[in-house]
Length: 201
Image (cartoon, rainbow, N blue to C red):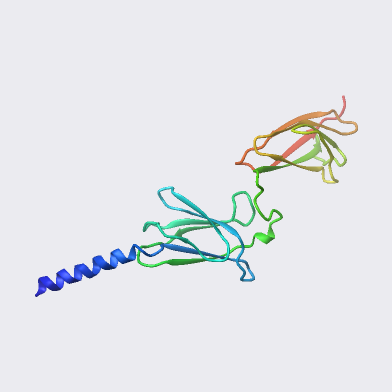
């Protein structure tokens, strides 16, 4: 009798384990602060390094074929503000864990990732004492000819594509010209370059 009780108990446990395999491990629900659902990229990384990426539209995003080790969830695109990373999110085979994330991409000046990776390059022009120089002229020769003047805080902003180089020179009255070259890579989407000008000899 005890043998049969043990046997049927094992069968129930095995059946439950098999049934559990049909459960999605994780569902991610992304909400704006006002409760609406935004379009949002979601990435789930397992401890093995395996990454799954999906996009939320108007329903929870499900990740079904995960293991039993905690995972890392990222909401939002790399390089944009307000990206959220949640580590050690619990997952199992027995139930679907619903992770609710409040995400506010509308606070970003860049609402969606550009179709081609880009870099923002901010030049900050100063004299040898660190005083910002307004109305300095930045003449870019490549990737295309552009000329911009610095604002009253010595700043001038350019945007270039990944893989391109910004080459040119900066000039200002009573200062010697200074050449510059700045490259754009996917790993560094925002660049600040301070150039200190020297007075004419």
